[in-house]
Image 1 (cartoon, rainbow, N blue to C red):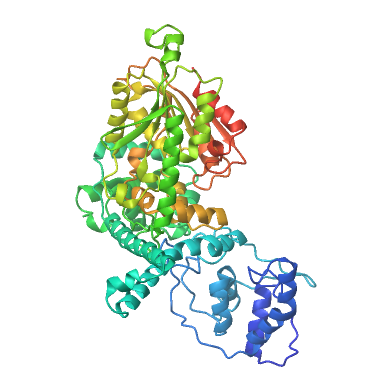
Image 2: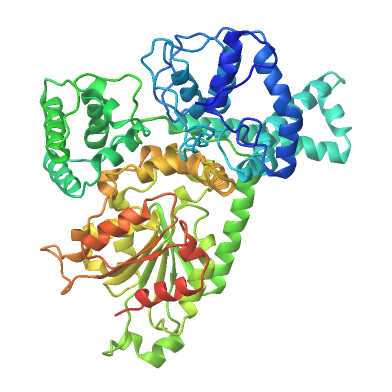
Length: 638
């Protein structure tokens, strides 16, 4: 074993504490000890100055007692959880060197557990690692999941850079505006009559006051919107027979159960999940209700127990009786909706860009229409093309079927303009084919007081609006459907409820497959970002008030899920003569869905799939290049 000299003559207790730290962190005094001490300059500074100072502090500082019976909080989605990501309760055999323990617990929690084990006074903990004579302990490997539920720690350099230079300045516009508005109102009220004092302000200060007043009023409106979003929504009808059939289809696709199922419980150890914890999840997934509102002796309770018994049979695992109160599960439509405040100017910028998008689409030949609460843009071939090709004469061999495109979460159609222009002008795209672009404003970061207080269109309302558009404009069915991200769910709705409107389906980064696994829900809603780009998407997209509302109160997974059998076969009442051509495009580095597992699942079930291994979510449709050629080739396929 490694041994350490005691040159400073410190007490044995403090020296043993330091030796434990050395065994736990063999590289102490290097950049591995503090995550922000990177680079040659940081390493030298740490070794020459901070390292010796920290050693002196550890050895000679007066110990401060830490409460030993305080349980560690389980990983969850609450924004107050900033530090540890471990799930095990704090052991009762904590070392008394609590200044060191506190430092490790908050800044290096994965090393805190090792220190506790090394100092286990009861002898029932782990044995200190043994190394050959003259050898060194391996550096502790960094757990990639450490930052999943932390806001400040275990992040990349880019995360802190974006946080300090972009996120905090943008977020602080609102509180600073409120403070400035309050200061100005107080100063004006103390300066005499309010109106003369207001008019006496300089133009710059008057302009600043006007803007900050608007920001403050918008903050109150945004707060009202967020409170409105907390209300629970009645779920769509879901019969017991449909529940049973959906459960059967889901368990048929279950693989790696012990590895994948704990993600619904924020990655706790599989052995900690008990029977009532699973019932919590089943009650949300199939009854859309909390377990506490269900009488387990009545029909609903018996149905949940039946599902749990079936799950145990399929998985081959018997869940222990009882409940672990520290184990929480993700319940998307029951958990609080956690949108984050953003300033009015952010929405104004988005609105301006949306207007520019509308102008661009107009000059490209599109016209905007609406049906009830659903709006869409439609390009119809002009009269010259109709006369040239005989579009309205129904000549054989002329492809007149429309292409329907449905965008995903983000800034609406604006981000897709380059791809749509590329598709529209591609030599392989027939000039006789109409192009319909469906708008989904509730996931487009539009102003909250315009769309967020209205009821978003349901699945049946959306499908009815699409059917009305085909009838209203005389579009020839069936059509080719191209959807991206959340737009693939709308394409799936149409495939299931109006299969006569679907000829081909091209789905890019689909989020409609394998929804019995927690990747989509966990990664987009609950997981904290770890890199700078992820932080930008998290703050500006994932935590926008309208988007969090749609996902947290109107994302009904049993409506949105799509199975390969529904893609590759025809319903008995369908008027189509052949099953649609289907092609799926995935990004190998997608951080929202588990693209590799989805690709394996689709390939196993005979669905043609292309995996772009170096692409993340949305890269295939936003970057261009060879990916666009492949997508367009599938869109124009007969």
